[in-house]
Amino acid sequence: MQIDSLFHSAMDAGIFSKAVVGFLFENGESEIRHYGTAENSVFDLASVTKVCPTSTLALKFVLEGKLNLDAKLIDYIPEMQTNYREEILIRHLLTHSLDYRVRMSSLKDLAPEKILQFLYSYQFEKRPGTVFNYGNPASILLGIVLMRISGKTLQELAEENFFTPLSMTRSGWDPLSRISKEEIVATENCPWRGRILQGEIHDESAFSLKKLFPVGSAGMFSTVPDLLKFVRMILNDGVFECKRILPAGILQLVSTNALEDRIPQECTALGWELDAEKFMGKAHHPRLFGKTGFTGTSIVADAERKSAVILLSNFTYPKRENSAARINDFRARLSEEFFLKK
Image (cartoon, rainbow, N blue to C red; front, side):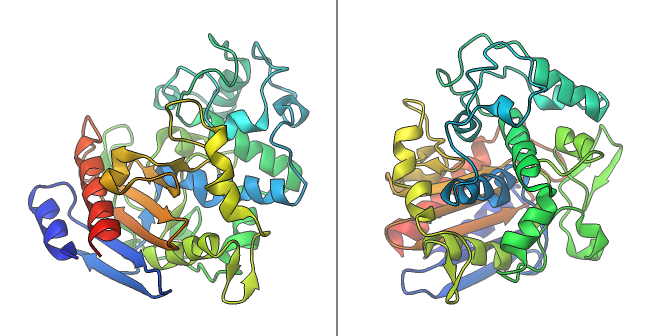
């Protein structure tokens, strides 16, 4: 693999200045390479939070019979006063098939209670399940459902179900409470907050809502070594080092079964994205699943070959770009280099 030259070229082009990449191979071995920072550096995962831990926790509850994909959202969040409130199902949250036509960052100056009220009272143009509209609202609502089912915060749920049993010792919200600032990669010189963000949640709405509770859309921090454990566990159908972490069937639910749940022509299925050429490149195929994050993070995993590539970078530092085109092009080339040329 020509990995080093790929990363050095990206750094020379200013796509990022710090990055760590991890590989899981079919033979069970792993490898980590790091550029401009230590391999155990902590990064803001941004929307990778939607799958680690949020949607994967939801699928755990589904497999355990604690949550039904076709349950009504109002059974868990009766405050929902949107139109079509009787028709919104849990599966619509996972597949991002609720017609929220709003950028959550536009609500960042509202009090967190007002942000929630906006989501609860939003008036949709299209019926649930008929249109794909990716964004933070569905994952925020899914996180609230998980908290109400369990009586625990997402941080507590993730600690109990993933971080502790997998020894993901550098993962979670509020990294500054346990990790020195110098070990956390800065995400942006933020004009809204007037400071460099280093250990603070980059996503504006998740930052605002954190005053109430950690939300399911963004705000998780982690490392490549920790995420390699998480992805290895899923590829082994819920087992890690002879310990069952998730119920059997999780891999099929993430990949094979999830194919039928997608909105036609879209890639997002039950939380994870499938067969997404945009960031998987020519390596894409129906059993390839993954997720990207705005800050320059991504996971791509092959359910058939039990292999994966994990990227954490500081794409948004010192300032965000108007488009994700450059980082998506890099992600695609990285996937091609690993899955097609290894």
